[in-house]
Length: 144
Image (cartoon, rainbow, N blue to C red; front, side, top):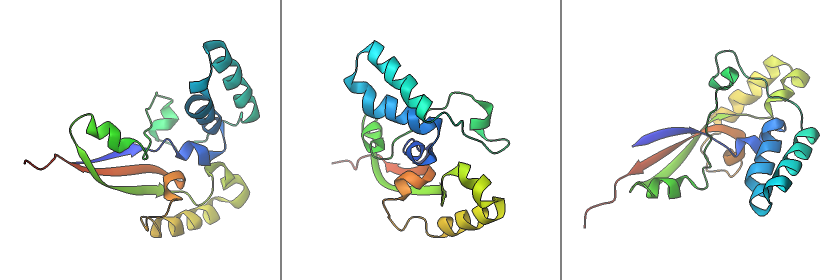
């Protein structure tokens, strides 16, 4: 089985409201009570108020709630359904955080992203953060 997933670790790379949300919900929140979670979340969103800019037609541009998945834990999620993840592949690489397009210009950003796409899947740790999508290749366990 092959399945693709939006990558939640990419939120750390975007340096925008998604980054603040990731820190609040995934890193800080588990240690806090309900009121503390709300206060910390609001403070983090004030530090990173920038809303992401999405390409026209992107599922994210519709503002529909979309679950993003962690490539570091996807094998555990598949195991709950009796599947074994054999490999991960990354796609939609970003050379710089997306909002830097205004600084670099669309043409330069496009060239940088194309170069990043060509280097994909060299099993580099950066792909876990700089790619907005990943693919899991999974199989059923072998019969004994």
